[in-house]
Amino acid sequence: MSKALKKPTLKQMIEYLLIIAILLSMLVMALTTHKREYSYKAYDTSTLHYVRGTVTEVVDQNITYSGADGEYITGVQNIKVKINEGDLKDETVDIDNYITVQHNVVVNKGMRVIICADTPQNADPYFTLYNYDRAIPVWILVAIFVLLVVIVGEKKGLMSCIGLCFTMCTVICWLLPSLYNGNNGILVSIITVILSTAVTCFCISGLSRKTVLNIISACIGTVSAGIIYKLFAFVLNISGASMNEAESLALISQSTGLNLSGVLFAGVVISALGAVMDVAVSIGASLYEIRELNPQITSKELFKSGMNIGRDMIGTMTNTLILAFAGGSVAMLILLVSYGVQYNQLISSNYIALEVAKGLAGSVAVVLTVPISAFVCAFGYVKLKIKNTVDFKEEAL
Image 1 (cartoon, rainbow, N blue to C red):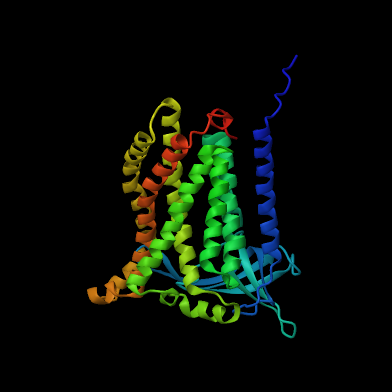
Image 2: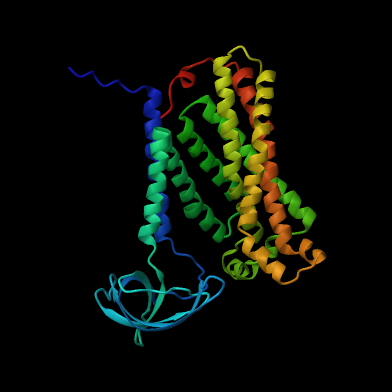
């Protein structure tokens, strides 16, 4: 006879319900975002339709290769493309594909592409080649990533993916529309951080005291990144108007009330969230294990252990943030070198001031998260004198 199924505990039932609530909230956010209408649009795109198609023939082409490795291709291709979806499905259209440095899309027969179909009411439709159809490769890469995480992390890997999806949904479906519509950038960013941190930590550790302490540590550390950025912004005399995109964003601001400084604040906080959460959860997990192995340890000793663990993490985590900002700026830095920018010009530019403020704010927040997490966990595990209940013994989902 097969063994009877073990009845889930109350804690497990609550965890299952919370997981269902998280999944449903993601679905609701995605649906509301898909149907949302924005009050301002920079361009009228009502007649434009981006549809999938397949290149059936390259009738003629005249292209030249240049650059160190022949990576720059210019010229023109006359191609025939069969449209695979929309009102014009199964129609074959002729397109002149003009190839430039900016539009470096060279196609061959059988390639899947995206077509921009401009279909005004009182004129003939006009078709241009937008780009390669990358939807399938992108989703394959995402599936490979998820599969690897689940294989290596098993249940925790699956739950981590759910936490990641929730964070992405929160940023895309709630944070961005809220900023766009002129809501308070600081408040919206803090709420996003709290929601994302709470769900991610719950997915990692389930319902437990460890989860609560990790959430507190990560939230304090991430919000400190925003506070530090505000201080740096005051010292360096920078604001939302210092961004390269300020002119375009100002047009949106005039119609929706978008706050440029709020956009900057949100960018700093969200970029620091991952690294800060990593430090907070790592220290919290380590101190949890130390406390389990040595229940008699004092809060002072536990705090000291947390600081020792954190010191080993500081170097790599600060490098992670600084290199992330630098990595995204390589092309711009090369351009600055080619322009012969002088030291006084460079060090006082808006670009350098913004990058320094954002990079250092996140890195300082990572450093501060070490003592914050060590203190919160030492206090939570020892000083509160909470009974070692099921949340310390029961494995999380």
